[in-house]
Length: 356
Ligand code: ADP
Image (tube, rainbow, N blue to C red; front, side):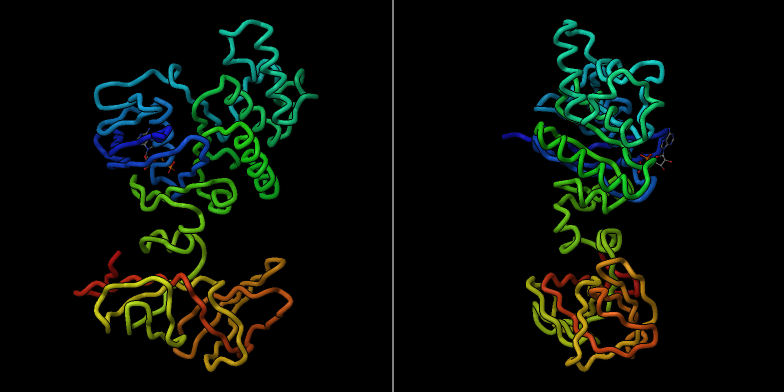
């Protein structure tokens, strides 16, 4: 089956500056995807281009094989089968919740329209709020109304632009899972924009990590964390640090945490100098190990505690241990590195600048 959304070599400009620079991605029907990246990298511009609010200077955007944006043509935003959910909910304050949800359904007969509104209210669990006004609802409830309004006309694609930014952390977590369930129950295809990776991990099937208007990696949350394709993705997604290593074989590297072997082959010459990605969960507490480390700080996080550990060389690594293993600052402990997904980046040849 062809992808529902296809973005090919898209370039978008503000004035004469390319903000999106030759971006390509594909999204299958029923997938929930996320654009994740630092502020200003172009995430909202991509959503605006898909919705038709920003023109394509080069390349194209297609929905179900129909080009909706290109250098020469642009389907008007209201003609695109796309629904949008905004950070500030953007509900009409003078309309009831039912009227807000019914706003985009004016071509339907009154009966069908009312049936659809009832169905949407049930879906977002707000049936008792139909006659209330937006200011009488909490932020989380208003965002569910906003989702119901976007989904009511049955668009092919829903775009969510930082939809949980105005909500507190606990509510964000609950609402993101709740909205994922609602979208999945209707097999809706959606793209979420966020700078919060926990939200992206919890909600999305695929994530595109964006930097300077290009996709660095388009992958599952698991692969982004365990198999980042470059240093930027490795640094941006998840916690961790790099330690120096020297290549012994295609799969083994000598490091100050011992010789480590991964499950992926690197074709560089033996003796190559590399940086190896160490995630906090790759470090284990191991009294039998000869590698010692000094606890220099700790961050309690409920079920686990994140420790910063200084090795004898002064390199600092992070270790995530179950919180019942309560260590103290200044403790000398023994650790091992266990990293099946061993990710190495080779140093460039001519300088201390690292290659991507
Ligand atoms: P993000 O959503 O990732 O934070 P945006 O897509 O909003 O990023 O913005 C990408 C870049 O485009 C930023 O450098 C921003 O300053 C610039 N930009 C956004 N809107 C405009 C505009 N209307 N005019 C000029 N530059 C803009």
